[in-house]
Amino acid sequence: MKFAEIFKSLRKDKELTQEQLAEVLGVSPQIVSRWENGVSQPSLELLPTIASYFETSVDTLLGIATPVKKQKVLCFQFRDEKSQNTINEYLESGWTIKELQTHHLDDGQHPEGVVVIEKIVR
Image 1 (spheres, rainbow, N blue to C red):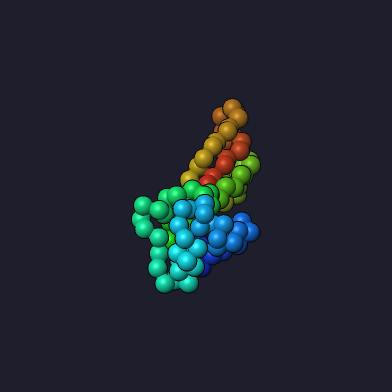
Image 2 (image 1 turned 30 degrees about the horizontal axis):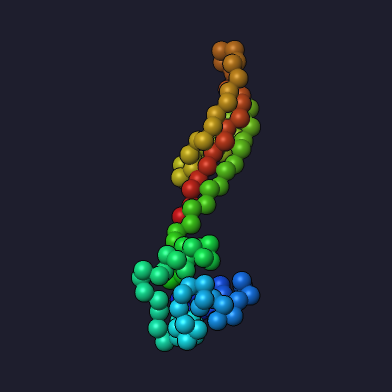
């Protein structure tokens, strides 16, 4: 999306006329119209003011996509070799252990407990 489309959309979301927004920003309604039609763009000095008024970032105003980090979390209860193998498969594919809780067991027994694994996706 271009600045003109984003700016116009933000103005309409606030249910403002071009004249009302021009007054808030200290510019003429014709300037607001030019920005919305893509004829011109605001100065660099005015972009933070516009972003602040619309409670957004300058990057958003300019249509710059920022990478999104998503975190995936899985929780497993492990009691036997099969559950341990499943967890190991996740770890081999890039998941990491976020939390591990084990119970004290007698010698020779498989560990029991809960493991929480996570993967950050960009």
